[in-house]
Length: 462
Image (cartoon, rainbow, N blue to C red; front, side, top):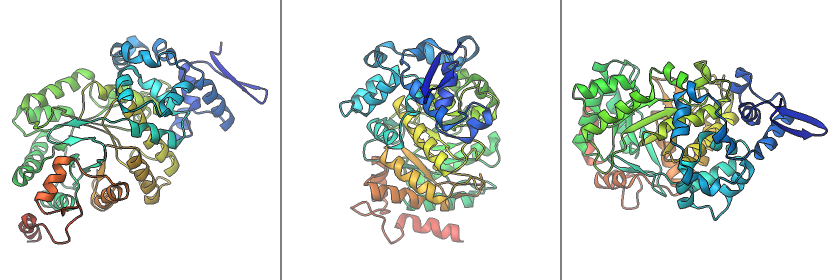
């Protein structure tokens, strides 16, 4: 018997479960069509959104989308839910929750206090009945600050991950990209390499390269090699200089199993990194990446829409107090997010849901070359994320990652966002840029090459 319904023009639209209602209420995206869970028409979608708006938030505490006994992510969500934090909003339905979030009286401290009481499904539900400007306005009020070797997420700041990937892991090529990025003010979020050759020996070699550069120039930032967590744990065991432990995560136990991980392994990795004591101003040592469609691509979505699955991944991330969380929003391809319009919506949803749950969220503003998207779409998403208070973005040479084969944001894009929105790098990194004469007293880039890097440029040129 249908549990939810709404009538439009004398036609009664019925939805058998909360899972189906959430899926049918989701704004259009190709992945949900591929999964067979999308609304059949715009009218059905609107009916689902109107029905969803009437659902009490408490309903999400009483109905698991994936059975508790079958899924450790569900168990994590249920077992860590804080009733006291939920109390101020416990009387609201989804529509009222939207109004409450948009209310000027609901400020940053208030949102921080209720974050632990919001489940991923609640965040996903309310996002489905919000316009883009709603997602931006609420996310801007959420402030999540983390720290390891610098401080990220402060108001008025936008950080950038310097991503010096190379198709053969060539040390000179990586060093050239690092120098390029540093001289253009990127790298305060992390200097992070996706290795082309993913084995422990190569991971250790890249970690040592990054650590040597950071130490030589006394850069207040952290390094990361984005390898599987088991490789990082082994590298730590062998004495590698690991700042951050990286792992891709998803919103179901089965999807995480496809990545070769579970919650216990994530806890082991975090403990290993903490044991090194490499933080100077904090101890957030985890870096997670996510993306809508990952659970579906693994056949592990349990009939959920991809955005709800994505929000559940944030519960996994939240449990391990990460320094950085990153939605690689357009990377998985047009099968899941078809065009620039869908990518933009997904990026703002991801940022909103993660921030609402208390995560230090960034976004890889990106697309693959076979998607119906281009750099103009990315400019629009980048600008909206900057307004929304996104913690960090990517810095890729020329915005073209020649190793991973996708389009992202460049060092110049990060400069654009900072300039047009009046944002600055992390404070410790900003002071370093001035000390190294990369920037002047006003924070603008110096025209002349910083003296400390002239020799480095000559070595690369030779």
